[in-house]
Length: 325
Image (cartoon, rainbow, N blue to C red; front, side, top):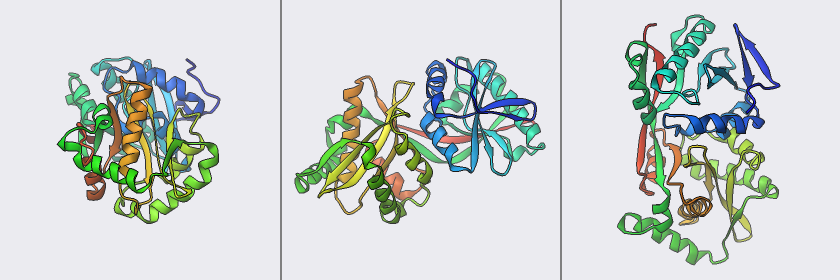
């Protein structure tokens, strides 16, 4: 694995690398070696790279004591860690690397402790690092809004039992009402149609989920679907694309769902998208058990939508700050 990039940036006394799409293999290697549960939705490489394309921040990485640490350098000039560092290391080592990075950020941020943080960790990860004896004296956690939802892939494939009766009925209704519907893999030629679908979704179904932010990474993930290793499905009905879903198998062995958009006035379409995607994942790798579909950010509509798929893992989210400041 390479540990340097052609896009080096020096901040303070440290040299960083701007995240590049060619860094996918590097990130995957470090994530696969990580001892804590590397299952945070927003630490997926595709997401980290895609948000770096917005112009609002630079996403930077640096190897610190053998671990890959990922930073955000914002347009306003602050620097913080986006997630826990990746790579081999027990809880004590993870905390040690976090502290080294945060103390550098604190100095860079002019001793402004409010800007010096690990932006997001989930409940699994917090439990891991709290097992380090050095955690309690050095770091503090602050609850952040939203619950990460993880679906059980085999259960979604089967749709058995009373728990999935409503989803099963909705999928069957979609199939009855739209016998001409075709679900296929995304092609580059679908890009413009999916941009239109994204605009339509934002003005209709998306209004229910006011705290969903995906405009930039929706475009970038689709534009670079193959390079990012994404599996994207589109649904065609009535001669047009009416829905899409995208995600990927992760280096952890499970999967994430990065995007889902659909025309709101087609009953059962969204359920069909989720179920068919789970089945594609299962055929690709029967060992994939969990599908991380991200946080609902406390939004009632999005929370209720995700709960119908009976998530089996529901993780609170936190931010980490230096305790001694």
